[in-house]
Amino acid sequence: MFRFSAPAFRAKSRGVGANSTRARRPRSFVRRARLDDLPHFPESGASDSVAFEAPASADLAPFSSLVPAIIGACLMMQTLSATVIVNALPTMARSLHEDPVRLNTAITVYLLAAGIVLPISGWAADRFGARKIFVFAIVAYALSNAVCGFAQNLAELLMARMAEGAAGAMLLPVGRLVLLRATPKHNLVQAMSVLTMPALLGPVLGPPIGGAIITYASWRWIFFLNLPIAAGGVALVLKFIPHVKGEEPRPLDWTGLALTGLGMAGVVYGFENLGRPGIPVWVQATMMIGGGACLAAFVRHSGRTRHPIVDLSLLKIQTFRASVVGGAFMRVGMGATPFLLALLLQVAFGLTALQAGLMTFASAAAAIVMKTAAPPILRRFGFKRTLSVNAVVVALTFMAYALFTPATPHWLIYVVLLSGGFFRSLQFTSLNGMAFADLDQPRMSRASTLSTMGQQLSLSIGIGLAAMLLRLFRGSGPLSAAAIAPAFVVVGAITLISLLFFVTLPRNAGSELNGGPSRRAVGR
Image (tube, rainbow, N blue to C red; front, side):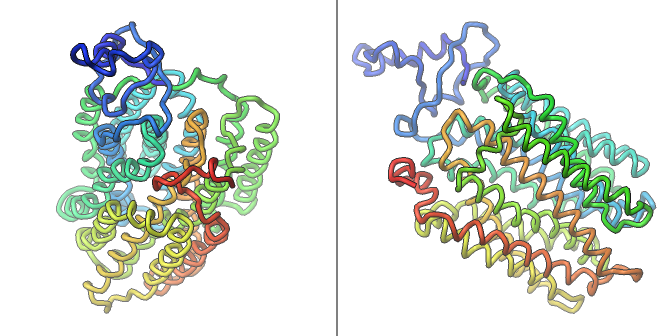
């Protein structure tokens, strides 16, 4: 449910002049509002407010890009931070006297904390209001970034990264929830593209800016980049985004929250530490088995409770299942590749952080170009064909990174990275849109939470997989291109598993997102 100031709404609902069509509408229409009015609502501090349900897509006016643009600008903090830290890991490792491979834990704990906190994000948005939670998350994320910049050892850095991950867990699902409730289905792909355009500036700006900072100044300054973005984001959110509150909050499933949190912590952290020297095998096995047992217990618990913290019944919907489960194999590659690529370019090839950053810049720039091309491609070929063919292309681009050597011309590396970024962007834009194609509004909050959980979990597994493969292929020798190249091949092969979920989709999957008839209308 949305909530907004009643006086402003009544002024708009009366229209202008005696002949206004809006003025002659029955009083029951007061419970609907035009989407393009949303950004103009005043602050919601007044207690005089009314609620309305998001109308059906057929009744909606053309979507305004202001709200998703603001949300996307705030999400840029996450993408900027993620891009910069991956590029900075070798330098940070030397400063903190740690092995570069071991320092990937700084990324893992972030994703781990995010995965633990994510289940509660939808409930918190319904309970306290999405805008309030969103502002809190922005402030907490910026402050934890600052603490990372002051860390003096690996333990302090990991604690600050955990706090950063917990705050970041609220940013994406809550922001996306606002968008889902305010967007008709046939505009959802376009809205998702607008949402991610500002966020993609992080990967574009992060490599060159972060590389310059690392090369010519201290790596600590990379964590202070988000402070001005956070200040501007809070001001824009408070000014333009209405106070959004959904359905009446369900009771919090404390048992489910504990089981999912412990389960993901055990599985992800245990997986990430496989083969790591200094940790006994029995400890690794205990974490993996214990985490798996907790997740299995939650599956049983969710079928017995009325309001589970994670609604697994959503996975019965084929389009949602293909997006979350099939997309997980794609995102494993996305989690592993930046880490592997940074080590390949800097450690194995001897490039500076700035040189490596300028190369990875190409991949992010191509992703922005694809955001404008994705809607017409999906309208022309449909979700099933686009996802199936593009999965093969994405897998091949991952494997192509294994062919890079110190003698490979830099222009050729740019071309391959550019192509990879272009097609991966198409894949994830399609997956993010299709996830909500066959869902009604009451289930959007739970679907957004579960979808984001799947994304974070698969990314963390990807990073753990990358570290495990490096330890396997590296052996006891130094880190070299020969040890990193096979890891790209394995990651590409895992990506191909997603085809099993895409090729079995019905031909009209996601047709409503392209302006076609709903699958509920034409049959499943």
